[in-house]
Amino acid sequence: MEADELLVLVAGGDQRAFEALYGLVSGPVFGLVRRVVRDPAQSEEVSQEVLLELWRSAPKFDPMRGSALSWVLTLAHRRAVDRVRSARAAGEREQREAHRSHSPAFDQVSEEVEAGLEREWVRRCLKRLTDLQRQSVTLAYYDGYTYREVAERLSLPLGTVKTRMRDGLTRLRDCLGGAA
Image (cartoon, rainbow, N blue to C red; front, top):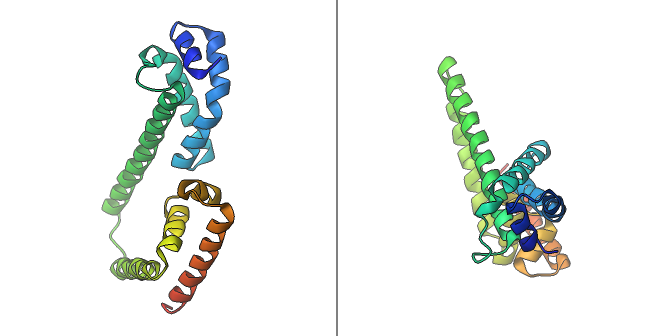
């Protein structure tokens, strides 16, 4: 039985259909959540929340608007993004509170300036890469994709992506070596 059919049965309260649907979607849900949240423990927790929400909100599924899997993965992505935003907001609140309760260190300004200069140096070095190298490096190191995911995203063989990454990282290392 396909996910669409199972989800319609789950909407009617069918627990066996939910067990079968769980088996079909739990892996893709965890994979998507893991890529967004990054932390394994939090990813498991968010995945369980998504699957619980799936049970509760199954009647809201409309097969005319898309597939069950895309609907479930949309739920997962939204929940994962919410978790990341919540964690970021909590961290920012803690930082503001810590900032209020402590006077800033004398070197704080110089550290911020130095960090800004380093970011600018990295940007300049990235501009020296070929478009293909920069695209691969950016997807892997800034967007968090694996080499295999980069290859899939760019519709290229894995070996080509690995070569681009190696050459791009070598050029970055050489360029950033001049920054020291």
